Image (cartoon, rainbow, N blue to C red; front, side):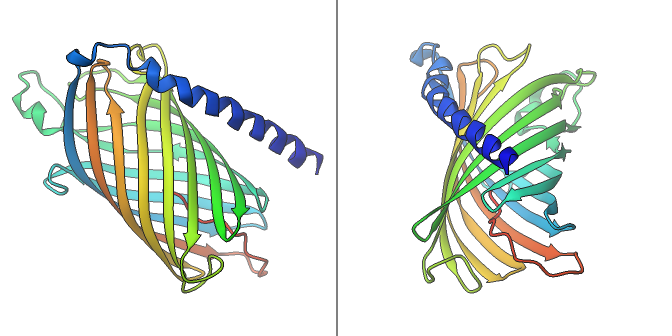
Length: 275
């Protein structure tokens, strides 16, 4: 009990500090002259399967499996993205997760005009850790997600070295049931979230503010094991140069699958997966 109280205490303090930081980091990345900015836009389609399988009283296997395309939504492959982890339920309002990620990135079409040899597909390796805190506000669920990532990534040019950088993410999300008082079987729900991405490392000089995503969607809970969600994300990115910006429109479709592999049935922990 003392551990839970201390954890929540520091969690709330961290949220407060992060809230102030979010007010300043976007401005930090805007030091360039607006007239020098180069802004582009593109559309993408993100499809994903999210799994959460109970393997112990408070222990879950967590997995995400994504296939992403870009340019007129489906013209080119963008990523195959695999995230794995183990989650531990501290109590009904607090969960911790850690694991690794192995995404594959396809070179963008502009690399077809590059004279130097390049790899069409490059891997990236990450470790990740997450804290998820949930609140009930009337009939809605409000989530605070803090995620940290250690990323080993490289360029597409042949022989490019892997370099370590760090990413810090905070997401504020809510799920609002529309045809029931709570999130249960047969419920249609609205989902809304906003997430900010901040990065650091030796090579992160002009774009510590990496990205901001805003998502609006609808979902349906078929039963306790299966739910569906779809929606639209507006993403605003700043590139390495500090003057290149990308506005992305992301159509997102997802399936969530939950199972309980423990022999003894226990009270279900009311967590809804997040984008």
